[in-house]
Image (cartoon, rainbow, N blue to C red; front, side, top):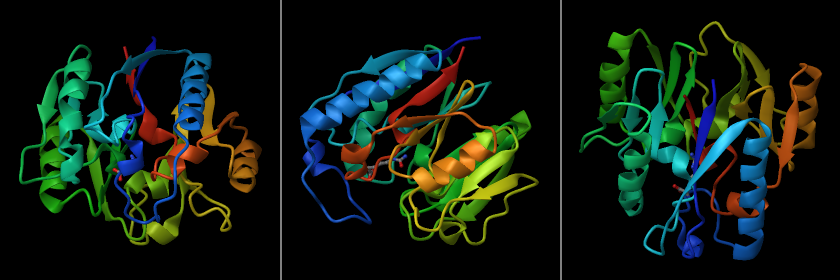
Length: 255
Ligand code: CIR
């Protein structure tokens, strides 16, 4: 089995990226591009084949490709981003994903961002956030429940997306900042809590043999490693200024 990692160029307009919880600070485009390339190399190092989509200045947030689609074994759900400024990003991602999976779409007025959906085996954690509304969750559930997925919906409170607060680091282990998903039903999963000094540390990207993880959270990194999980550290400091993290910058498609 091989995995396609769909990525997307950083827009020259990244300075105009959507911000919800952070104040705007200048992003060094060259540094951001270098970090993004290193991220792509790390994905290749983990055995993925990177397929990078192009962008333009009408799509400031296009690098955060994860928000456009959610991949299941059987199909892909094409999102309808909660931020109107991001809706132009959908078309090219849907087209690319359509080469690998049949696609189903979230239809307006429902909204859903891919960053609010975490698939772990047959369990789907789905967050209601400033981007994903109840209708979006209902459409997602209607698409995947007949396929045998259990959807556990939760409120996201205090961060942008569900995956800012919750990701998987192994088949049966979640990494969490529970302060941002206080009412979440975490199923029967083991939960590793982030180090309290690193509130943004719950976003890890699972790839073959380990996780890609931001270099900026050494305390949580140690906790993950103590669990016997291999961590490949990546620099995400520039894209973090646009509220991006490691899962946001790719869509992984097992083929
Ligand atoms: C946004 O606000 O949509 C972007 N500036 C950041 C998106 C990050 N995506 C993610 O967490 N999945």
